[in-house]
Length: 364
Ligand SMILES: Cc1ncc(COP(=O)(O)O)c(C=O)c1O
Image (cartoon, rainbow, N blue to C red):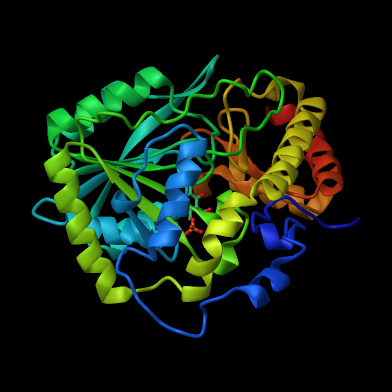
């Protein structure tokens, strides 16, 4: 039986590449000199501002700072915010990366729950309030969340900003998947944009081209620093000092960023098309897994029956049906589940989730 791998989330391995990338790189001007700028080249930062403007969001270039990856952005923010009693609240389930970055940064990783509801996964506000009251200095929210796909509702966004402000905690919103709703039809339309305006909390918004442009190999992400004017301006100043120490974003990438962001519609259209097709294929194979409205991102968590050991299930699926999925515990899922990558090529995905659903049937 052919091995079907449903865990590939690297766009360059699943055919989501730019056909003219070499030409663009070769034609890129200004790469033979080095003129470092701590927060990133002004033209690159202005391109990020323009990207947000297209989304009708205000993210001024002078509050934007480039990093080599979103992971690096997290690391820098933890350095910036570091003080006494370093504790950050991370979503559970969540992407495994955050726990490691937190520990490497010398922080204590606390968590808050997301709960499944009929409308999709939602923040557990009581859990967050408890974590903030216990002294957390920062909270990470993912919009849309990996791996549940939930966009934060407008009400939860406002509530989070107020709760963090009251507790004196910084809010870090990771939006790397914000351009990618699962469904292209009306069920995806209207997924709430993250509302940045007038945040009473110090707010850091993270994005990057590893997902937005499917270009992880070019290494470029950004932090937009917002919130109360004086605090945000000071945070930006400190971040620029920190960034000046590393100057980690390559000059050719910065030089290319404006044209790549401006030309994003083709690659994003292909990714959205794949997410849409694969989401529908999953619903056909596993009808109880209809996508809740307003969901997005590149991963999908598929719940199994309570009591099932998800690692044993994933191993049995691999041995008996030659299909590779991630067990949900890798994403810190509280209930048994497996996770599949929605950017898997369509044919592989459809065949793979059919095998998955057949095997899961008694367990889901
Ligand atoms: C939600 C989320 N944020 C950040 C990252 C890391 O992004 P980057 O490749 O820019 O470091 C990932 C990686 O998949 C992710 O899933």
